[in-house]
Image 1 (cartoon, chains in turn cyan, green):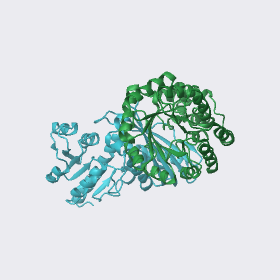
Image 2: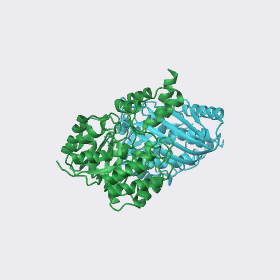
Image 3: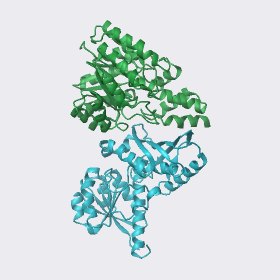
Image 4: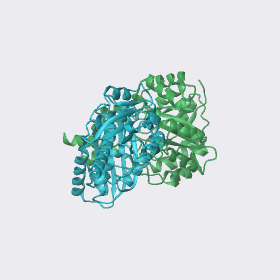
Length: 295
Length: 333
């Protein structure tokens, strides 16, 4: 079967990491890396690996749409608003890794197939990809009245985009906690830690549930969800025992990355790119089946 | 050396940690009246972790902090209400709300190495016409060169004052002198200093700061603040006047407020306990104290050991969640 041809816009940390993950997909084929700085590490690595490169941004890509079936946007929220229409108008599928959130939120083990026909889907934030599966794991057992996440990442793994968009991180994540995680009210906190050697991404989820109890069912549900995420991020693990205190539940996670581009401490980078590739894989498989008249 | 100092009282913000974020409007208003009567130019009101700090991670606020800001601002004729904003916890939207409630100063706080997350918030503070301050937390963790570089970023975004903040109460007077002197030389804006008394150094550090050129100084009445508390505002006024500085503060109304408003609301004496000493020794963010106490009881482990390990992990302000993990790991040992 033919693979879907992939374009990546944004040759920074996220875009470059994506390239390595796409190489491992059975249904995707890395085709073109698009950036705005010909000297960027991402564009140079892509060229060295034999892929097409475009250093003139979205304008350059629009002239070479034959190169792509599906495009990952790893630029910025502002740039994505400009990029999206130019691509979806021509029938290309778009996976948005910025906090622009034009399309619906997707967190693969929670709603990976729900928006499979949407022209543009959004990957929330790294903190959202790490924590929303856990919130959903609890909310499918007992109603969650409030969910709060605390994502702590190493300073080294937070690039200039993340730093300039820190308010967008908290507001986009909070909204997805409600819309995808199923909590009535969501809140997100992000902390940067400069320790050397860099700390591994940690995520803590504090929840208030409608009624106490259900401990066994909640633990089992969390356990199953951890395995579901491990299928695409093997370094996703519970860091401590889940704490139950009447209506409060606290879950502690650590996310070790696959070290494709940045080292393993940058689990925040990994969970975002690995989730995006999951979504693209599902879209590709769906389109293949559709083409073969299976769906 | 200038003789004129600007004092800022943090009882109603740092003290929020000490009362587990349970201030009432009546308490805040009574304290605000006293601070205004004493002529304290600025005082801070918000959750201990700043705007938006109400959370399961740090403790839920008993009262909406916007109501508390309103209650404080409504009785001020000369004093101005300040708010703390930690990007990553609070947002620009929270700041706009606080300004509508009456805030006139914002202190935008980051870990001492992460000033660049605050650019937008500092710019917004200036756009809103607020007195805008950059607050470098956990200043004991960075070298003098790093602090200077980070402070310059704050200044470039528009901060009118940059603070050296000894969040862990871990600094000694020579550390303070070194840092304030370097900032004084490198920056053209004013320099501030915020102390914690975990090693009984708060007053000594405050003196070191003003002698090195700091012109903004924090304190809290009865030292009400995280860990062993802050420099005690009323003591500081007396000491600084004795040293020949001009604070413009009337001591008696301040003493009355400390005695009649703050003392009755304290949940525990603001003393240097074994664990608050360990905060200073290990360099741990002061607000971890009461959370470590609770976790130590819950898991039956030594709270001093929890805090020592957190110091070794180099946790930054806001990482209260590591307390649970460390407490659990101590049980397993």
